[in-house]
Length: 54
Image (tube, rainbow, N blue to C red; front, side, top):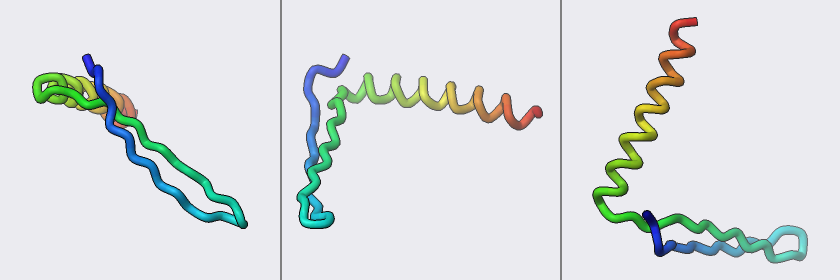
């Protein structure tokens, strides 16, 4: 699937220290993004159905 990654880095000062937070996310082709989105939606639907029926 994803071979390349997009990286974002943020620096913040906290009590005399510099904290660096990096967010690394995969870069997908359009078809892959749609497939992954559909899969996540199906899983969320299953979870919501489980808790709504309780």
